[in-house]
Every structure is written in C-alpha cells, then in structure tokens.
Image (cartoon, rainbow, N blue to C red; front, side):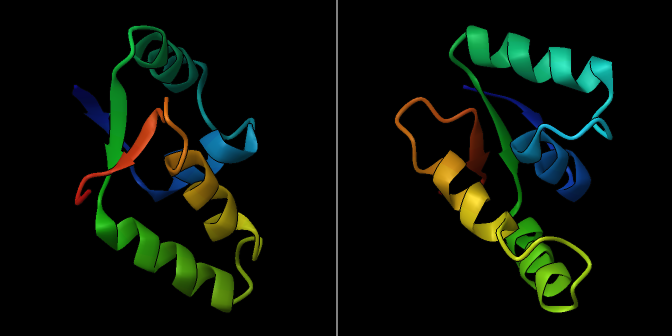
Length: 82
C-alpha cells in the first residue's frame, strides 16, 4: 500500500543516506518500510533526476541507484506510474 509521496530531494537524500533528509522523514520512511508499505514518487521526479544529472548538479549515479532501489522485491520507493 502507498502511504506517502516523496519529492525529488527526499528521494535522492534517502537513496544516498544523506543528512539532508530530516529525522522526521527518515523515521517516516523507516516506519513505512517496516510495515511493508511503500513511498511513491512521481514520474516527473525521474525526468528531474535525469535533468539534474545531465547538468552536473547531482551525481550521475543517482538514476542508476534509484532504479536499483525500485527494482527490489521489497522496494520502499515506488514510481507512482508502475
């Protein structure tokens, strides 16, 4: 079940374990994950990540890492279009 929707920064900070993600957000995602539910992000977030990566504003590994997170059986992050 989808329990929350994340924006671009939250998705990026989550997959990299970045301290930019607030403790509240970290705890919320952890609680959602422990209950077996998921956090969605919109398809435009993927486009934004590609754009930011191409402009050198974020790591070029971001999209690869995000897709790896989404492609697991027990994925916490889920593209809302899937």
